[in-house]
Image (cartoon, rainbow over all chains, first blue to last red; front, top):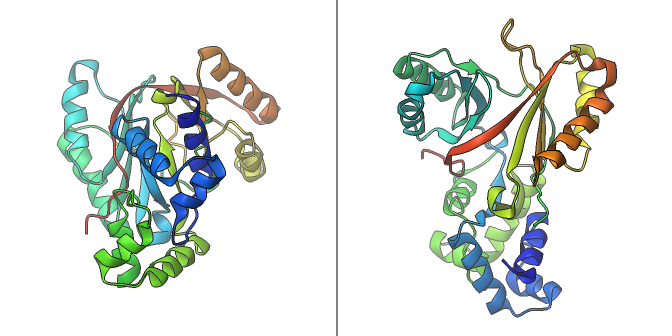
Length: 147
Length: 158
């Protein structure tokens, strides 16, 4: 990753225009050609520096449902339980964390009913208590990390 | 509300925006719409908050942010909205939410994500939140992530 990649990442985290030739517009701000911006962007996505480039959706505003849930997994069963939970397409993220509650995952579904059903299915298949922690209020969301 | 065309645009951009000089035109062709309509609808979804923004999402670890901590705090319910808004305004906090307690084992109701390139940087951020909360902080805990087990975009099961 060089200085230009850094500039591209920092710029594109802020937003992206909706116009006929948006890459050309951003490339102009960065002082590079459109082709170069596209090539760099493709590379940053291919090597995993960026996990995504595109619209970031607000699940609840789309009518869908979203929650954060946690389980306390015995160490010896960690990989097996991770396999069971990750197999649900409704599970979007899953992180191992340092705590008694050591596995934390985000579930996204199209309806609240599907969310309840997914939580119940995970509890059934893992045999674990699932701690459901849906947000009651959002104060701030804006993942922006200086590259 | 979202209609079928909005949903088609959402589905077509789940994997990301096309990496071609005219990405909205490319979407329009795939969906049999005009580029103008695609752009108008995307702008409308941005205004309504369905699309938070169009942007790049970095992998924290690849940018050197190895210390990604979910900080959780037990604060009085009657103060949480004021305190949550203030914690959310700290420039290093990427997400800040009020979530339910699960007593007795989980007393925490305020969640704030912090990201540090070093443990020291993360610890300083945590200290800053603790200072801001002051006496309202009745207990807290920091859960650093040790491994990403799964990370995909939010997909509609369609």
